[in-house]
Amino acid sequence: MKPFGWFEVTRVGLIQACLGAVVVLTTSTLNRVMVVELALPALLPGVLVALHYLVQMARPRMGHGSDVGGRRTPWIIGGMAVLGLGGVVAALATVWMDSNRLAGMALAVAGYALVGLGVSASGTSLLVMLAKRVPEARRAGAATLVWMMMIAGFAITAGLAGHWLEPYSPARLLMVSGTVSVLALLATLAAVHGLEGRASASMSPLPDPGSPRPAPLRFRQALAQVWDEPVARRFTIFVFMSMLAYSAQDLILEPFAGTVFGFSPGASTQLSGVQHGGVLAGMILVALAGAAGARWQAHPLWRHIGSLRGWTVGGCMASALALYGLTVAGLGNPDWPLTLNVFLLGVANGAFSIGAIGSMMRLANEGRESREGIRMGLWGAAQAIAFGLGGLIGTGASDLARAWVDDPGTAYAVVFGLEGSLFVLSAILAWRLARPVRSPVLAGPVRHGAMPANSHFKGHAT
Image (tube, rainbow, N blue to C red; front, side, top):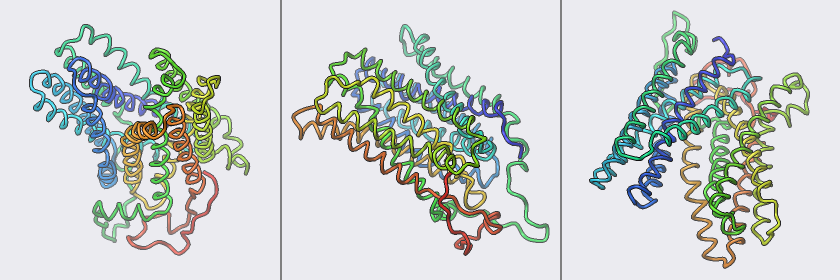
């Protein structure tokens, strides 16, 4: 298989941007319409967004399907089509709620479920394609480029959709949603055309002509095999814990700034922008370090502190320190440099994210062959569950702490401290991640239920 250059990585990033364009309408624009224009409880869009995360537990099954078929392109295109359909159905359901609340809500459940399924199919296969085709030295930069394009998809769609929705009307909402879905599908078709190559280029080599080709394993058997791999299992736990810590602070940062530091709504929104700017800075930092450090990869010190694993561990520890800084800020320190603290939190989050995504791309290829889709799907499902729970746990913990503690600042400090500790545990898990030693036995498929005697794990850096 020919490795991806930057042009091919950019094409993959365009697909990721299309995913973000459809998703942002369902998780942001429709959210606002339900709460403001339709005066519905905020719990309703919250439950629907949580549903779209819950449905993403199907990611391992989607990944297995692409493993068995040997090609990712049909899953990317099919997933985008389902995602676009889900976006249109969700918009139609939102409009219907104005005249028939119950029927509209029932249709919205179907729409958001389709969104989750589409993201699962397309997003999982897209990441597997990156993992299999991007050279190791280029992974940090590739992950940064793809995720920045996804963020650009969020921002551009939100801005243009907001412009075309003025003045708001149900017909405009349906028009904007349908247009975004159609354009996303067309752009995906253009980006993916010829990207993967012929089927034989992405499938495992055929066995000898004289030996029968083994039948594909059932999904549960294949999933059990992957879960039995120590690295895959540990990385799944790491993804869940780190993304739980990452998402839990997202919904309470602005209320903390307003309650404890007296920030106005506009100022707290700007503070959120500072954090996102820090995330982008952290992502770019890792990408530049990866490119500049290519010639130092043979040095033992670089393998520990400059590798993707080093950036993952360092990003988690830096995120923990930034959250502990917010803990100190909540304990009665009105002169604390909150804006700088939040920016550094964003930088640390961005560095950890790219380190984790780059490590995910490498580890997807470790272990048994033809299981890359299941591994990526398993980690994607862990991330989706963590994001779905993170907002609920973060806000619920802050409410609970405020019920027990009279001082709001102290209550928020407790929650930030717990989130920082989650990042510390995540850093420990990331540091303990090991890489299997390559051997002739591991180079080919491993028989179900059997591991080679020499498949011990060596704990050197990524």
